[in-house]
Length: 524
Image (cartoon, rainbow, N blue to C red; front, side, top):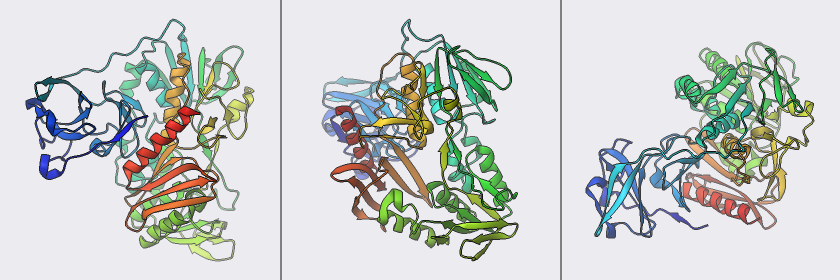
């Protein structure tokens, strides 16, 4: 796969920058000299005051929106891979020819303008409308049921309509809230930096307009595989020809005495995050149990709120098993610089109304406890209906389970990974969305392999770690750059096989690693 790092002009040359309505840079409506844009180069400007990029690939010119439709990242810092433009922050990708969002976490298309070359100048002409939706073939199912309204479930429902599917879609969620941006629950929303109205992935009107039967706060009692219907606790039995199981994961509950006290919280749902926010408004001291990504993001958010925060975890260094010794040391220092106190190599033996007692007898006073010790896949429905299981729901390369017509995606799916050569199950938000997209197309008969490399990001005090691949077991790491300067990458190996790459503010390196992993997947 040919991919190009876009060669961006200097600010002094073309005045790039500004927000989505910036009029800085050239007015593409007035044209640009072809000689000013090298092959593989990008120029930021505007069309009628709307920020845009000019991308040249050989004799092809593309005028496309300059900011990702997910979190408005500057796509001028991104990467072109084949016919796609990739976001530097969260690795969404867009079709250069249509502007269409091809890969989560972005779902909305970029604006696009028709390019016209006249002599030695190229002009942005009329703004193009959205690309026509395809029409599924006659074999498309009449009804699809999706169990789970999280990342994978929402992405699947959205993709079904984007692919032109016109049949019945029932989206069932146990959570009473409509699908929302779960990563924000431990990040900006918990820190008090993002309002709650940022969280919904779509407004209520969207589900009505798309004719998606959204059933919230609704528990599934049973999947009747032979009858191809789902029995809900309210007695209704929606029928399906294809079914997607996307039940996600549940927090690991500790048996520690005192875990049922009102100031002890787990974080998985919007309701959980709301409860922690409410408690944080009154709290002075907090104990976070667990040094997982969620636990550490919670710690960072509580420190943002000026709450004294202690982290208790059994490991000797936070996240060392996942990120290796160099990043573990860096993360610990990053948190300690902000005042977090670590109690490593320790567990909580008991909790009472005024604090926590550790296993060595030490006492940590607190009025808020948040538990973040991991999750386990929600497999009860899959088990009851007889699907093949092994630390998750076993699926093939197309995400179909052992029962024909039933697919699985997200935290519960365990699929054959071509990077490691093993079956893996990964609990990442963006990956769940991408699996939902692939499963949706395959429920329509696409016969498409899931070829995305796992990707996630974690934010701590404005420092973002991006991670591509999956190194469940690694025997060495290679550090490049300077972690203290927030400019580094770490590669994870088992033997000679590179399994993953983590980066700090090296977005192009992260995008290149993703493209390389995907190329390796396609070749296997």
